[in-house]
Length: 363
Ligand SMILES: Cc1ncc(COP(=O)(O)O)c(C=O)c1O
Image (cartoon, rainbow, N blue to C red; front, side, top):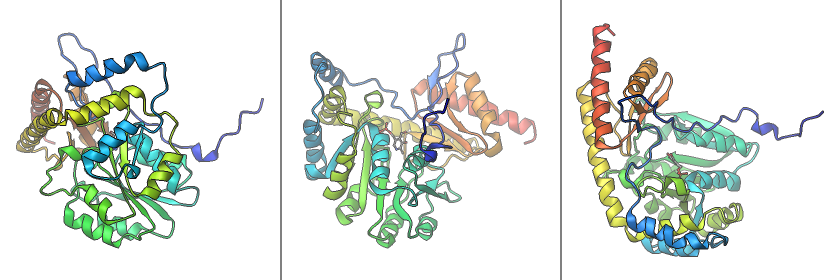
């Protein structure tokens, strides 16, 4: 029997690898530090908003997500027709690829970066233009600029970068955006925007205000702790936004996601106070790892990166033994999400022991 004919572009599309759950071990409290989630439980006010909306779930959501878009427009002082919402920013990334690129077109991004980038590139049949990060695990914007060619339709700048946590500063981004051809859409993927030091790291919205070819991607999954509800947004000029709405999955953002996101914006101060505690923990974890000599990359996100190269899987195994699920990239390094205080403290213990063992072995 002949098999159904599928698009050949899908052959070789890498599967998205979700963060692993911790191995359950007797007498060990497990922690999941593998998905860059927010370990804080939802705010009671957000849970209340969701509960209040439950009797309505037999109806379709508001197709235009009007309440959420109006709340975002007010929050960021941008017109409502510059905002599109989607099923997480990963859904919006797929839409951005769809509205810009097809076979023969290039989608350019730093690498290693968010693993969805090569996936959405291949899904639309475009060609990945992956440019290695620099020696500090940061985007090499000069090399990215040099890699732009006549095929490039979309540039993804992950700032801060997943999985390395590093961010490009204002001067570098200023120079990059001034030089990129104006007919190429540049997406500033700011999934971790709330975790950066705003005195050094620019707000992508400043560039969206300056350039018609800049779109900013944000999410409620990280700082706002709504990862399971799947809601993100894109702020861009009206032509890009109109195109984004054309390709959106109808009713993709559920009623519960819409009300929870609006409630989160109403109670943003409480959420941002939690973000500040995560930042403080991140800096403490980074300092401890640095003191151990493990040289974490400079993180502006809710996770840290250890570029351990060939030792990556050995450290991941030590974490797993201790009940900590982390995100290893074999041969490259590990991404470790900042979690509960107990989890962070255990990570440092494991790192100290593992590092001492390595020193004893003369490595
Ligand atoms: C850089 C980056 N962009 C986008 C996303 C997607 O987030 P979501 O689809 O939950 O909004 C993630 C999630 O890990 C990310 O790290």
